[in-house]
Length: 509
Image (cartoon, rainbow, N blue to C red; front, side, top):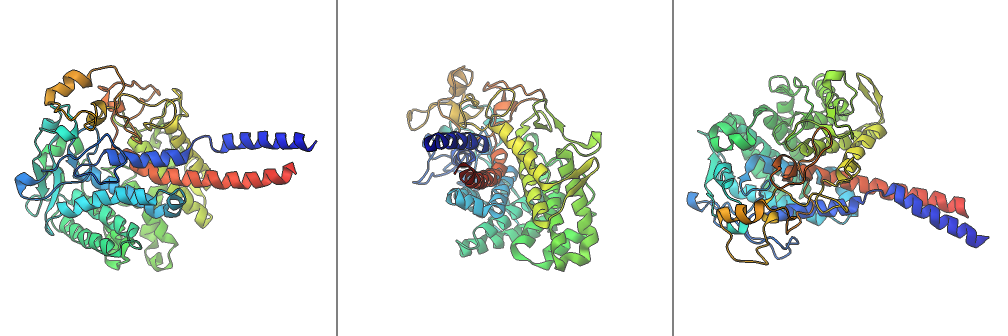
C-alpha cells in the first residue's frame, strides 16, 4: 500500500513540476545574456562565451583621433548607434536594480554586470569632454550596401558627435540615465567605477540640459534609423530621474517636479515605452515616490505622474476605454506596430512586472476605466506575454532564438548568417556575403542565442526568412527588459514549486 502511495506521489510531483515550470525561465535568462556577447564590438575578452565571434571594429574613432573601440552593434548590422545602445544599458541596469536578488539566485549577476559594463566602458570613451559625446560610429546607408561579418568590415567607420554647436539633449539625457542607473548597480562591488559613472552622468545631463536640441538634427545620418520622434524632453526628465535615484540630490527631484508640465511628464498619455519614448517608464518610477514622506509636499504633481502611469498599465491590460488600449493579436500578443513589435512587448512586460510588485508592496489595487485590477492580474498578464515569446502562441514558435525546440533559424543578422570567422578566416567581401549567404534558404550557420526577433504580425503570422527584416531582425533593446522579468518569473516558479511540494508531502503521507 505504501508503495502505491509513493507512486501516486511521484506522479503528482511530476505533474506539478510540469505545470509550474511550463517554461524554463532559468534557461531563457542565461540565453538572453549570451545575446549581448554576440553583439559586442571591439576586442573580445578571454572569457567570451559566444565563440563564433571574434575581434572587430578595432580602428573605430581612428579617423577622428579618438578611441571608440568597444560598445555594441544594435541589431543585424554594424553601426554603433548611441541612443538605442544607451537605452539598452539603462534597461539592463534597471533589471539589475529591481531584481538583483532574483538574478543572484539564478547565478547570473556576473553576466548581467559584464553586459552593462561593456556598454558603460564605451560611453566613458565616447564622452571625451564635458560637452562632447560621440553619438555614432559608421552609418546605416553605407553599412547596408554590404553583407559582411563584423570581423571583415570594409564599410565606413566615420564617427559622429554632439557638442555645444551641435546639441543632442535626447542622446545626452539617455546616456546620463544609463550611467546613473549603472552606477547604482556597481555601487557595492566597484565603488570607484560607480563614482566614475556618476561623474560622467552629471556632466552629460548638464550638457544636454544647457545646450538643447534633438540629436538627429545634429547627426543627420541617423534620421532614417533612430530618429528622435518624441523629442528630447522625455530623455531630460528620464536622465534627471535616474540621477536622483543614484544620488538623492534634491536638485534632480526638483527638475522632475518643476518641468513635469512643460516637458510633458504629466501631459502625455502614452501606450508604448521604447528607446525613443521614455514617458511611461518615467511616470511609473515617479508614481513610486508618492510613498515617501519627504515627497508629500509634491503629492499633487506625483499623483498626476501616477495617473499617466496607470493609463499606460491599463492600456496594456485592455482596461481603458476602447480607443485607448494597445491592440492585441488573436493569440493575445500586445501589438503596437508592424516593424519590430517585440520591443514593445518586452518593455511592457517589464513595466507591468515592476508595477505589479509596487502595488503588492503597498497593498494597493489599480483603478482602470473598465475595472479594478489587482497585482496578481497584472503579473499574470506580463507572464502571458513572456510565455507567448517563449512558445505559447499559435505557431508554437519561440521568438527567443535558441530557446525551445522551434525558433527562427534565419535571423536577419550578418555575423550569424555567414560562416564563422573562427572556422574560416578567409576574407568575405561586401557583395560576396549577399551573393553566397544572404539569399540562401539554409538556416544560419551560427545561432544568435538569446536574441528576441521582431516577431509575428497582427494575425500571429511569422515568416522565417533572412530578408524579412521587419520580423526576423533582433535588437539589443528587445532582449534587455526581459532579463529582469525572466529572473522574477524564475523566482516565483521556484517558490511556488517549493510551497506546493511541501503541501504535497503533507497530503501524501
